Length: 236
Image (cartoon, rainbow, N blue to C red):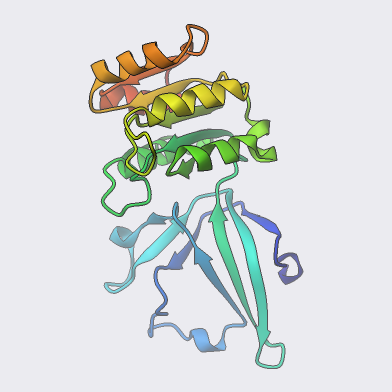
């Protein structure tokens, strides 16, 4: 199977897989004699150190159908050892997908990570994955891509966004501007604004979007409504 791991290839692992977190390889394993190493850059792998068999193990769990882009494949030790560098990517290839846009989404202390883990693990048959973006431009670039276009107007693709994003100018209406732009791209998928100030968000949406653009939009501060939305337990 090593022949499939060439730079530029997209690889999908169909089963659960675990790997150690960080650059240090545990001394309790004889990795020096293994013929293949995977070095994976991931933002969506899930920590499972709570369930580890070793006190000093900090392991990352990759759910079934995790997708990776191969960055490079290095052969050493006279061809006997392979080091494969990969980056985990979310391309919307799962059964159900959520595009979540938030300027804090890649911060370690972001409060909403638990909601994503909840949706991914509540019912594995739904195969829900999250496409995480930190600003409007990156989110729109994904929607314009061939992978994003495949998701256009599918019921199994939903969008969550905040309203205020400190990494954009203007910051106060970033969520409204994002939804307006995705509607202009032809995406009429259900959208949820998960905000701290519902009244202010409703006013911005009413001011900046046309009645047609406002269809299939839910604005909420309620955690249960968010969980139902990202778990596809409700129709919009």
